[in-house]
Image (cartoon, rainbow, N blue to C red; front, side, top):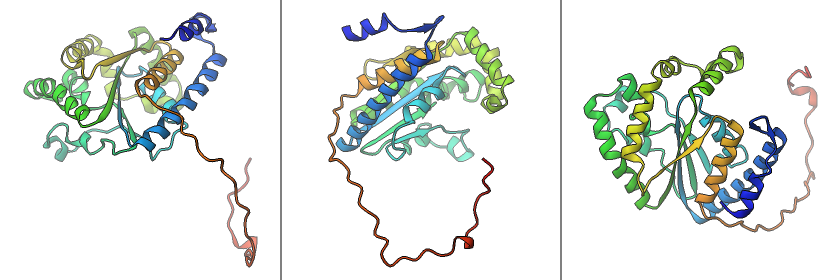
Length: 273
């Protein structure tokens, strides 16, 4: 962190323990402008970027992903959130279903959960065998090294949330009709298996937090701080320059020779508002 960043951190407005909302949105806007510059540079230079987001349920992964992609071109920056594997996928090499989503030149791929499902939910809920689990821990570092040596930039984030804060967020989802869809049986299972998930995470880090492909932990009890800190760090991990484009001039419309059909021939959406 630069001296300027340290000085700014000393004067951050807060609402109690949380970042002030006005300060948060102002900083988020600045960071999103930098994300646009970064994603234009990635496209121009033909870079290939993977960002993995892992963590407990309700830790805030989806929230930061939403803010990252908000201003970006969806053809350049793609979000991959795979569902339950099919019978065919279960019979394939474990990493195969993820390989098909790896970035081409000039693309960013954000994995909202990833191959690390095997070390988390599959391990805790018994969806994989002991042999499959240990094979994953042995092969995962080698798989990631191959990706990185091929020229892919890979960044892994673990969102850390306390049990008290997770409970609070679950209760918000239960009481808010617009958030009910975020809850699943797996989420409820993660609450009752808190210690088991903690042990699985510790074991996963022991094998996969390597010098070549380290884990970056985001303290996520404060959503606003977590989003800003994660985006700020992501920008620092990919050296980029602002691309200077020519100023766009909007050409005039040439309406010569065009006669518009009668407006009564069209069917319009009712103007309720």
